[in-house]
Image (cartoon, rainbow, N blue to C red; front, side):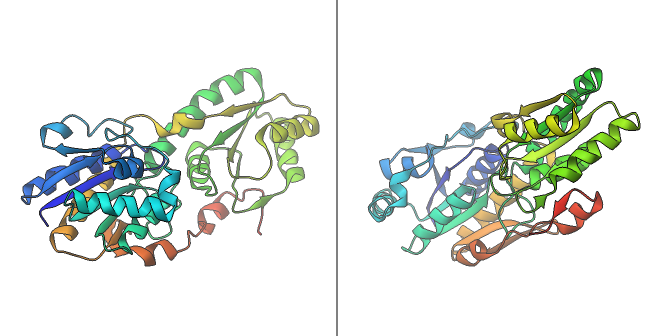
Length: 322
């Protein structure tokens, strides 16, 4: 294993830079040449490669986003695009590839693996929607960002005695909403994994107001079927209380990664280089019970992401199980 490449793809997440740094430094430590691929699979197809050194990854550990940049690449979803990527890897003499990103990124990595490329997948996404790993890089930072927002929104909601619906990211996974709702003391959390009872939700808001509670905070995952603006209208109509909507959107993707995300990213990056040095078959790297693990890439992608029933039952949210 003489020369390895590294890319970040899909949505950016805090901690990606820490993973890039670990791969570069650990690779150089083992005598490898390390090349950074800009703009993910798009850059892979176009041959946008840069040699990486210790200096090139200096002072990036604490930075959000990704220094390698990222992009969506529809062309890579085609057979022609994948063949172009494989051809470019062969042309540049890349012996192994490290791909950092979410489910789409790892599926792309698996396509390359099936065509003979050694690939190590690192889970970089705030959504925490990959079944083979307990946590993904960026999730802890995103939840921390939401918690900060909840605290500030609670101040103004209390002052105006209003209900506030806070929409958070996560696509079809409700983990950001669930964890932030529990840690932030939200009255209710709505997630795509469970249906909810709008009548019960409205009654709980009214009961809270009647016993003197000044505000109600509702955390809603973006994947919940009802549109957020419509939800606000229904709540206001049924409770008679002023109800506002706050959509946090891309705010959750930015910012300096937390300690947990920096360490997870660093450990995953180091493991990726270790496996490449051992000429291992393609793997998906993650964490289970606070231990760094590596599964066969194709098998890891088949693992279902299981909703945390125990956490949802803890607060008796207004769920109706599907």
